[in-house]
Length: 382
Image (cartoon, rainbow, N blue to C red; front, side, top):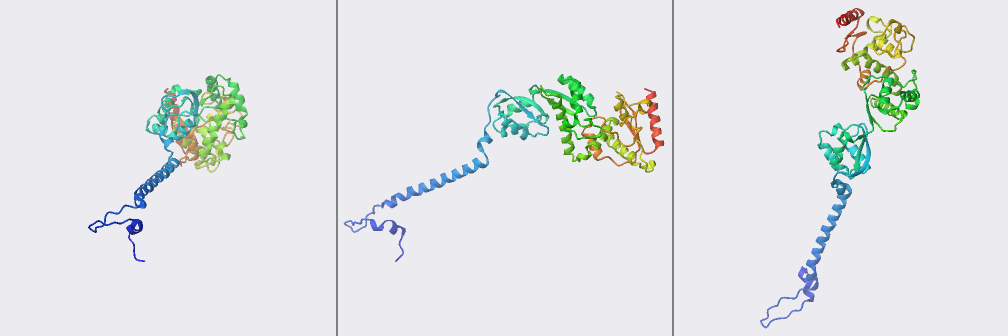
Protein backbone atom coordinates (compact mmCIF):
# COMPACT_ATOMS: atom_id res chain seq x y z
CA UNK A 1 0.00 0.00 0.00
CA UNK A 2 1.44 3.32 -1.01
CA UNK A 3 2.21 5.91 1.73
CA UNK A 4 -0.77 8.08 2.65
CA UNK A 5 -0.68 11.62 3.90
CA UNK A 6 -2.45 12.79 7.10
CA UNK A 7 -4.85 14.64 4.86
CA UNK A 8 -5.57 11.48 2.93
CA UNK A 9 -6.24 9.54 6.10
CA UNK A 10 -8.44 12.19 7.67
CA UNK A 11 -10.53 13.46 4.82
CA UNK A 12 -9.96 12.39 1.20
CA UNK A 13 -12.37 9.49 1.14
CA UNK A 14 -15.35 11.50 2.21
CA UNK A 15 -14.99 14.72 0.32
CA UNK A 16 -17.22 15.77 -2.58
CA UNK A 17 -15.36 17.22 -5.43
CA UNK A 18 -16.73 19.38 -8.21
CA UNK A 19 -15.09 21.33 -10.89
CA UNK A 20 -15.73 24.77 -12.10
CA UNK A 21 -16.29 25.58 -15.57
CA UNK A 22 -12.61 26.36 -15.76
CA UNK A 23 -11.68 22.89 -14.53
CA UNK A 24 -10.09 24.19 -11.29
CA UNK A 25 -10.62 22.29 -8.02
CA UNK A 26 -12.74 24.13 -5.43
CA UNK A 27 -11.87 24.11 -1.66
CA UNK A 28 -13.08 20.89 -0.09
CA UNK A 29 -15.44 20.98 2.90
CA UNK A 30 -13.61 19.78 6.11
CA UNK A 31 -14.67 16.47 7.55
CA UNK A 32 -16.30 16.15 11.06
CA UNK A 33 -13.11 14.56 12.45
CA UNK A 34 -11.02 17.50 11.25
CA UNK A 35 -13.41 19.96 12.92
CA UNK A 36 -13.28 17.99 16.22
CA UNK A 37 -9.49 17.65 16.43
CA UNK A 38 -8.56 21.15 17.75
CA UNK A 39 -11.18 20.99 20.50
CA UNK A 40 -10.03 17.51 21.45
CA UNK A 41 -6.42 18.65 21.75
CA UNK A 42 -7.46 21.57 23.99
CA UNK A 43 -9.45 19.25 26.26
CA UNK A 44 -6.51 16.86 26.55
CA UNK A 45 -4.12 19.70 27.45
CA UNK A 46 -6.52 21.13 30.04
CA UNK A 47 -7.05 17.72 31.57
CA UNK A 48 -3.30 17.26 31.89
CA UNK A 49 -2.94 20.65 33.55
CA UNK A 50 -5.85 20.07 35.90
CA UNK A 51 -4.66 16.57 36.75
CA UNK A 52 -1.12 17.77 37.37
CA UNK A 53 -2.40 20.60 39.54
CA UNK A 54 -4.53 18.22 41.56
CA UNK A 55 -1.64 15.87 42.22
CA UNK A 56 0.62 18.82 43.05
CA UNK A 57 -1.94 20.19 45.51
CA UNK A 58 -2.51 16.74 46.95
CA UNK A 59 1.24 16.27 47.57
CA UNK A 60 1.66 19.71 49.15
CA UNK A 61 -1.40 19.36 51.34
CA UNK A 62 -0.22 16.01 52.65
CA UNK A 63 3.44 16.88 53.07
CA UNK A 64 3.49 20.59 53.86
CA UNK A 65 0.07 21.08 55.46
CA UNK A 66 -0.57 24.48 53.93
CA UNK A 67 -3.58 25.21 56.10
CA UNK A 68 -1.82 24.62 59.42
CA UNK A 69 1.25 26.54 58.30
CA UNK A 70 -0.67 29.69 57.42
CA UNK A 71 -3.63 29.90 59.80
CA UNK A 72 -3.59 31.57 63.20
CA UNK A 73 -6.27 32.74 65.59
CA UNK A 74 -6.82 36.49 65.62
CA UNK A 75 -6.64 38.73 68.67
CA UNK A 76 -6.34 38.22 72.40
CA UNK A 77 -8.51 35.13 72.80
CA UNK A 78 -11.33 34.35 75.21
CA UNK A 79 -11.86 32.55 78.49
CA UNK A 80 -9.08 31.21 80.72
CA UNK A 81 -6.91 28.13 80.54
CA UNK A 82 -3.86 27.06 82.55
CA UNK A 83 -0.83 25.55 80.86
CA UNK A 84 2.42 24.21 82.30
CA UNK A 85 5.88 25.00 80.97
CA UNK A 86 8.22 22.21 82.02
CA UNK A 87 11.92 22.43 82.72
CA UNK A 88 13.90 22.15 79.47
CA UNK A 89 10.95 22.98 77.19
CA UNK A 90 11.92 24.52 73.85
CA UNK A 91 9.81 27.02 71.91
CA UNK A 92 8.45 24.13 69.86
CA UNK A 93 7.60 22.17 73.04
CA UNK A 94 5.69 25.13 74.45
CA UNK A 95 3.90 25.58 71.13
CA UNK A 96 2.73 21.95 71.23
CA UNK A 97 1.39 22.47 74.75
CA UNK A 98 -0.48 25.59 73.60
CA UNK A 99 -2.01 23.81 70.61
CA UNK A 100 -3.16 20.90 72.79
CA UNK A 101 -4.78 23.35 75.24
CA UNK A 102 -6.58 25.23 72.48
CA UNK A 103 -4.64 28.42 73.13
CA UNK A 104 -3.20 28.70 69.60
CA UNK A 105 -4.35 27.13 66.34
CA UNK A 106 -1.01 25.95 64.96
CA UNK A 107 2.58 25.86 66.13
CA UNK A 108 4.08 27.89 63.27
CA UNK A 109 3.09 31.47 64.19
CA UNK A 110 4.05 30.99 67.85
CA UNK A 111 7.43 29.42 67.02
CA UNK A 112 8.14 32.27 64.60
CA UNK A 113 7.35 34.88 67.27
CA UNK A 114 9.33 32.92 69.88
CA UNK A 115 12.41 32.75 67.63
CA UNK A 116 12.25 36.47 66.88
CA UNK A 117 11.95 37.50 70.55
CA UNK A 118 15.05 38.29 72.58
CA UNK A 119 13.04 37.83 75.80
CA UNK A 120 11.61 34.39 74.99
CA UNK A 121 14.51 32.62 76.72
CA UNK A 122 13.40 34.21 80.01
CA UNK A 123 10.26 32.05 80.12
CA UNK A 124 10.79 29.80 83.12
CA UNK A 125 9.12 26.53 84.16
CA UNK A 126 5.80 27.00 85.88
CA UNK A 127 2.04 27.32 85.46
CA UNK A 128 0.60 30.16 83.38
CA UNK A 129 -2.94 31.44 82.90
CA UNK A 130 -3.63 32.16 79.22
CA UNK A 131 -6.76 32.37 77.05
CA UNK A 132 -8.18 30.10 74.39
CA UNK A 133 -7.97 30.95 70.69
CA UNK A 134 -5.15 33.49 70.90
CA UNK A 135 -2.78 34.48 68.15
CA UNK A 136 0.73 33.09 68.52
CA UNK A 137 2.18 36.56 69.19
CA UNK A 138 -0.47 37.29 71.85
CA UNK A 139 0.21 33.99 73.60
CA UNK A 140 3.93 34.78 73.73
CA UNK A 141 3.24 38.21 75.23
CA UNK A 142 1.19 36.66 78.04
CA UNK A 143 3.87 34.07 78.77
CA UNK A 144 6.36 36.92 79.17
CA UNK A 145 4.02 38.81 81.55
CA UNK A 146 4.79 37.96 85.22
CA UNK A 147 1.12 38.55 86.03
CA UNK A 148 0.24 35.44 84.00
CA UNK A 149 1.95 33.14 86.48
CA UNK A 150 -0.27 31.21 88.84
CA UNK A 151 0.50 29.20 91.93
CA UNK A 152 3.12 29.61 94.65
CA UNK A 153 6.71 30.40 93.70
CA UNK A 154 9.51 29.35 96.05
CA UNK A 155 13.27 29.60 95.44
CA UNK A 156 15.88 27.56 97.29
CA UNK A 157 19.60 28.36 97.08
CA UNK A 158 22.10 25.53 97.00
CA UNK A 159 23.31 24.19 100.32
CA UNK A 160 20.16 24.53 102.43
CA UNK A 161 19.28 21.70 104.78
CA UNK A 162 15.94 19.96 104.41
CA UNK A 163 14.71 21.65 107.60
CA UNK A 164 15.52 25.11 106.22
CA UNK A 165 13.64 24.19 103.04
CA UNK A 166 10.66 23.09 105.12
CA UNK A 167 10.60 26.47 106.84
CA UNK A 168 10.54 28.30 103.50
CA UNK A 169 7.86 26.01 102.18
CA UNK A 170 5.72 26.52 105.26
CA UNK A 171 6.00 30.30 104.97
CA UNK A 172 5.06 30.22 101.28
CA UNK A 173 2.25 27.66 101.38
CA UNK A 174 0.81 28.09 104.87
CA UNK A 175 1.26 24.38 105.55
CA UNK A 176 2.83 23.56 108.95
CA UNK A 177 6.51 22.64 109.07
CA UNK A 178 5.41 19.43 110.73
CA UNK A 179 3.58 18.38 107.56
CA UNK A 180 6.83 18.57 105.61
CA UNK A 181 8.78 16.81 108.34
CA UNK A 182 6.27 13.96 108.33
CA UNK A 183 6.28 13.69 104.55
CA UNK A 184 10.08 13.81 104.46
CA UNK A 185 10.44 11.14 107.13
CA UNK A 186 8.70 8.68 104.79
CA UNK A 187 11.58 9.23 102.40
CA UNK A 188 11.21 6.06 100.34
CA UNK A 189 7.60 6.98 99.54
CA UNK A 190 8.98 10.28 98.18
CA UNK A 191 11.17 8.43 95.69
CA UNK A 192 14.45 8.44 97.63
CA UNK A 193 16.39 5.16 97.56
CA UNK A 194 16.87 3.40 100.88
CA UNK A 195 20.08 4.76 102.40
CA UNK A 196 22.18 4.40 105.60
CA UNK A 197 21.05 7.79 106.91
CA UNK A 198 17.39 6.84 106.46
CA UNK A 199 16.84 10.40 105.34
CA UNK A 200 15.59 12.59 102.52
CA UNK A 201 18.47 15.00 103.17
CA UNK A 202 20.49 15.72 100.04
CA UNK A 203 17.77 14.56 97.63
CA UNK A 204 15.82 17.85 97.38
CA UNK A 205 16.86 19.78 94.27
CA UNK A 206 17.47 23.50 94.92
CA UNK A 207 16.13 26.08 92.49
CA UNK A 208 12.85 27.82 91.69
CA UNK A 209 9.49 26.04 91.85
CA UNK A 210 5.90 27.02 91.10
CA UNK A 211 3.58 24.93 93.24
CA UNK A 212 -0.20 24.83 92.85
CA UNK A 213 -2.67 25.98 95.43
CA UNK A 214 -3.82 22.89 97.25
CA UNK A 215 -0.60 20.92 96.77
CA UNK A 216 0.12 18.76 99.80
CA UNK A 217 3.49 18.49 101.54
CA UNK A 218 3.84 15.08 99.90
CA UNK A 219 3.14 16.52 96.45
CA UNK A 220 5.73 19.25 96.92
CA UNK A 221 8.52 17.00 98.21
CA UNK A 222 7.78 14.44 95.51
CA UNK A 223 8.43 17.08 92.86
CA UNK A 224 11.66 18.24 94.50
CA UNK A 225 12.99 14.69 94.78
CA UNK A 226 11.98 14.00 91.19
CA UNK A 227 13.97 17.01 90.03
CA UNK A 228 17.07 15.80 91.90
CA UNK A 229 16.87 12.23 90.60
CA UNK A 230 16.33 13.54 87.07
CA UNK A 231 19.51 15.64 87.36
CA UNK A 232 21.50 12.67 88.68
CA UNK A 233 20.29 10.53 85.80
CA UNK A 234 21.09 13.23 83.23
CA UNK A 235 24.64 13.37 84.54
CA UNK A 236 24.96 9.62 84.14
CA UNK A 237 25.65 8.98 87.83
CA UNK A 238 24.84 5.32 88.66
CA UNK A 239 22.04 4.92 91.20
CA UNK A 240 24.33 2.99 93.57
CA UNK A 241 26.61 6.07 93.66
CA UNK A 242 23.89 8.64 94.32
CA UNK A 243 24.20 8.64 98.11
CA UNK A 244 27.97 8.96 98.20
CA UNK A 245 27.94 11.62 95.47
CA UNK A 246 25.31 13.71 97.26
CA UNK A 247 27.18 13.35 100.57
CA UNK A 248 30.46 14.66 99.13
CA UNK A 249 28.72 17.41 97.15
CA UNK A 250 26.84 18.57 100.25
CA UNK A 251 30.12 18.90 102.16
CA UNK A 252 31.57 21.00 99.36
CA UNK A 253 28.48 23.25 99.53
CA UNK A 254 29.11 23.90 103.22
CA UNK A 255 32.90 24.05 103.25
CA UNK A 256 33.60 26.25 100.22
CA UNK A 257 32.28 29.72 99.53
CA UNK A 258 33.71 30.15 96.05
CA UNK A 259 32.70 27.81 93.21
CA UNK A 260 36.34 27.59 92.10
CA UNK A 261 37.09 25.83 95.39
CA UNK A 262 34.43 23.12 95.13
CA UNK A 263 36.64 20.76 93.17
CA UNK A 264 39.62 21.35 95.46
CA UNK A 265 37.52 20.44 98.52
CA UNK A 266 36.39 17.24 96.80
CA UNK A 267 39.97 16.32 95.88
CA UNK A 268 41.17 17.03 99.43
CA UNK A 269 38.46 14.76 100.87
CA UNK A 270 39.52 11.98 98.51
CA UNK A 271 43.20 12.47 99.37
CA UNK A 272 42.52 12.25 103.11
CA UNK A 273 40.42 9.12 102.67
CA UNK A 274 43.19 7.57 100.53
CA UNK A 275 46.03 8.70 102.83
CA UNK A 276 48.09 10.34 100.09
CA UNK A 277 51.28 12.37 100.60
CA UNK A 278 52.57 12.77 104.08
CA UNK A 279 49.66 10.66 105.36
CA UNK A 280 51.82 7.75 104.24
CA UNK A 281 48.98 5.61 102.93
CA UNK A 282 47.02 5.76 106.18
CA UNK A 283 43.48 7.18 105.78
CA UNK A 284 42.91 10.35 107.80
CA UNK A 285 39.69 11.29 109.59
CA UNK A 286 38.01 14.09 107.66
CA UNK A 287 37.57 16.26 110.80
CA UNK A 288 34.92 18.53 109.33
CA UNK A 289 33.22 21.17 111.45
CA UNK A 290 30.41 21.28 108.87
CA UNK A 291 29.33 17.72 109.66
CA UNK A 292 29.41 18.41 113.40
CA UNK A 293 27.41 21.61 112.91
CA UNK A 294 24.81 19.58 111.02
CA UNK A 295 23.95 17.11 113.74
CA UNK A 296 24.24 19.69 116.54
CA UNK A 297 22.03 22.09 114.51
CA UNK A 298 24.60 24.85 114.94
CA UNK A 299 23.98 28.05 112.98
CA UNK A 300 27.71 28.49 112.40
CA UNK A 301 30.35 26.19 110.95
CA UNK A 302 32.71 26.72 113.91
CA UNK A 303 32.17 24.11 116.61
CA UNK A 304 33.18 23.64 120.25
CA UNK A 305 35.33 20.85 121.73
CA UNK A 306 32.22 19.50 123.45
CA UNK A 307 30.34 19.30 120.17
CA UNK A 308 33.27 17.62 118.44
CA UNK A 309 33.35 15.01 121.22
CA UNK A 310 29.68 14.10 120.75
CA UNK A 311 29.07 10.67 119.30
CA UNK A 312 27.14 10.74 116.03
CA UNK A 313 27.44 8.96 112.67
CA UNK A 314 27.91 12.47 111.24
CA UNK A 315 30.88 13.25 113.51
CA UNK A 316 33.90 13.07 111.20
CA UNK A 317 36.26 13.90 114.08
CA UNK A 318 35.35 10.67 115.90
CA UNK A 319 34.56 8.37 112.98
CA UNK A 320 36.64 7.60 109.87
CA UNK A 321 35.31 7.96 106.36
CA UNK A 322 32.39 9.99 105.08
CA UNK A 323 29.46 10.87 107.32
CA UNK A 324 26.46 8.58 107.12
CA UNK A 325 24.70 10.84 104.63
CA UNK A 326 24.45 14.32 103.08
CA UNK A 327 24.44 17.37 105.34
CA UNK A 328 22.64 19.69 102.88
CA UNK A 329 21.02 19.69 99.47
CA UNK A 330 23.65 20.32 96.78
CA UNK A 331 23.30 21.93 93.37
CA UNK A 332 24.72 21.35 89.93
CA UNK A 333 28.15 22.94 90.45
CA UNK A 334 29.10 20.74 93.40
CA UNK A 335 27.72 17.62 91.72
CA UNK A 336 29.94 18.39 88.72
CA UNK A 337 32.91 18.94 91.07
CA UNK A 338 32.42 15.47 92.57
CA UNK A 339 32.40 13.94 89.11
CA UNK A 340 35.48 15.80 87.88
CA UNK A 341 37.71 17.23 90.64
CA UNK A 342 41.07 18.79 89.72
CA UNK A 343 44.30 16.95 90.36
CA UNK A 344 46.19 18.10 93.44
CA UNK A 345 48.11 16.87 96.53
CA UNK A 346 46.07 18.79 99.13
CA UNK A 347 45.30 17.33 102.55
CA UNK A 348 44.09 20.47 104.36
CA UNK A 349 42.19 23.70 103.81
CA UNK A 350 41.18 26.69 105.88
CA UNK A 351 39.15 29.80 105.06
CA UNK A 352 41.52 32.64 105.94
CA UNK A 353 38.95 35.41 105.34
CA UNK A 354 35.34 34.60 106.12
CA UNK A 355 34.16 37.90 104.64
CA UNK A 356 35.43 37.10 101.15
CA UNK A 357 35.50 33.32 101.47
CA UNK A 358 39.19 33.17 100.54
CA UNK A 359 40.33 29.61 101.23
CA UNK A 360 43.87 28.25 101.22
CA UNK A 361 44.75 24.61 100.55
CA UNK A 362 47.90 22.84 101.77
CA UNK A 363 49.56 19.49 101.19
CA UNK A 364 51.57 19.47 104.44
CA UNK A 365 50.70 20.07 108.08
CA UNK A 366 53.37 22.77 108.37
CA UNK A 367 51.90 24.72 105.46
CA UNK A 368 48.41 24.29 106.89
CA UNK A 369 49.48 25.56 110.32
CA UNK A 370 50.84 28.68 108.63
CA UNK A 371 47.50 29.23 106.92
CA UNK A 372 45.67 28.75 110.21
CA UNK A 373 47.84 31.45 111.81
CA UNK A 374 46.89 33.76 108.95
CA UNK A 375 43.20 33.11 109.65
CA UNK A 376 43.65 33.76 113.39
CA UNK A 377 45.44 37.00 112.66
CA UNK A 378 42.60 38.08 110.38
CA UNK A 379 39.99 37.13 112.99
CA UNK A 380 41.85 39.03 115.73
CA UNK A 381 41.79 42.24 113.69
CA UNK A 382 38.08 42.06 112.94
